Amino acid sequence: MNCEELRDWIPLYGGGELQPNERIAVESHIGSCASCAREVGDYRELRACLAPLRDGEGAPDLWEGIQQELFPNRTHPFERVWGLARYAAVWVAGVGIGFAFYTVARQAVLLKSSVSLESVRASDPVRQDPGQPKGRVVPAGEGPGEPYEVRPTWPPGFRPRGFVEGHHLPRVERLIGANEEVRF
Amino acid sequence: MPDPEEVRLLARCQQGDEKAFREIVDRYQRRTYWIAHHMLGNYEVSKDISQEAFVRVFKNIRHFDLRKNFYTWLYQIVVNLSIDYFRKRSHHKTADLEEVEEVADAKPDPERAADRTEVQGRVQNVLHRLPPRYKAVLTLRDIQGFSCEEISEIVGCTNATVRWRLHRARKLFKAMWDGEDVEVGEEGEEAREL
Image (cartoon, rainbow over all chains, first blue to last red; front, side, top):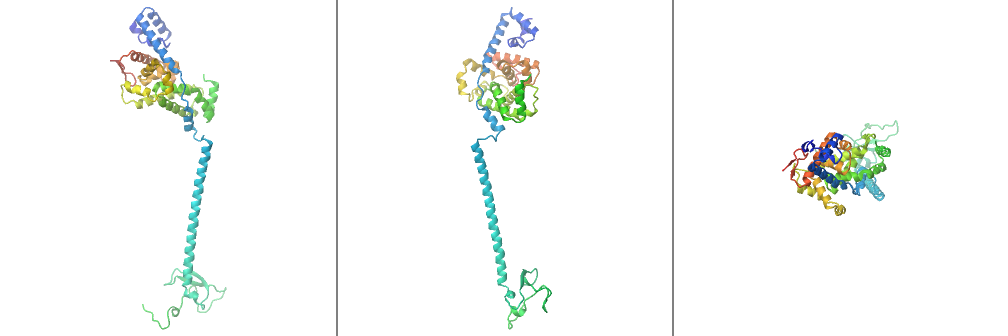
């Protein structure tokens, strides 16, 4: 075989990648060809330059980066406690704020309902009239100008004469004086 | 045949055992890092690639067949990540020597730089000018010492293809080493002497 035919095998000869028959062919050729023998030597030297690159230390903090990405819960104990404390503080603050809002709102509702009840009772001419039957003051759904009606609390089975069930409207004479005129 | 001790460790890793995975990392992290480093020539990037490779391994360890060699799978991930990184970074088909030297010397480890000889520095510079696929087989064969069969498993091609790429890689490396102006494509298919 000549140099041209062996050209593609020479780079592989030094690394031992040739088939047995290929290796024998190259060995027999370089025994008589100085140029190809020199080329084989060049490739051997280059491989010898590459081999030392294998040695060396690895990256020292490689595991820390891997651990941080794969096992993020493996934090320092102090960080874990601090994290829990922050979580608890936020939770307590939220509950406290919610409770404060609830308390203020409840008081406002109670205050509003007591004021409205008192104002009704205070302006009730019927209730102020000792001659009228006592009863419960309830808001009326209808009735001209009467925001309320009085439901008398009679004993069971008792009904006074002249009483209209369910309503007890004040007499006109009680609302206007005897000498006053009603104008529409 | 896989090492029985390693198979036990990998089985524990498949259960999510952190300590077992730590042992696996300790076994392979040095070689993993240097494969990436020889592919990319940058300390920080190589560390990131190595870390990413181990993370991917752990996330997919459950699908790994324990009857196969673990290291071929690991190094396959490293090589593919390195090639992907190189392609993303490379905007030109012709490898610019200045750009490659910038990559090779960018933020080198100061401790290692002091120990590197002039010859090794020149070797590194030439190595980083090679197209990524040629660089991969040359790194795995002539630096890391893997067999052609192992390399074919790692890079995912036939034995014949590994031999052909090795042949092209060494010829190209020698041409660049001898100072010849060689213009190569990303895959090296259009290599020619100027």
